[in-house]
Length: 61
Image (tube, rainbow, N blue to C red; front, top):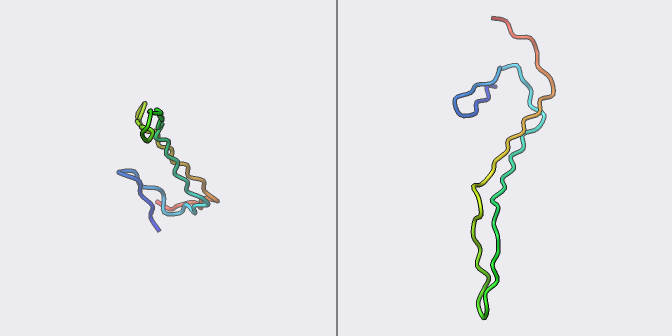
């Protein structure tokens, strides 16, 4: 199986153990009188992609 992420292609011999994607949107809340709270973004979102492999076999060229 061949894995790819954007333009990057992983070795075909990699056996993935875990893939985890985390996103932080940094949303803040402003309370208002006689109304629902206002929510707004205070900074750009942050995405983290963690890839853990179990093992990798040698590939022949």
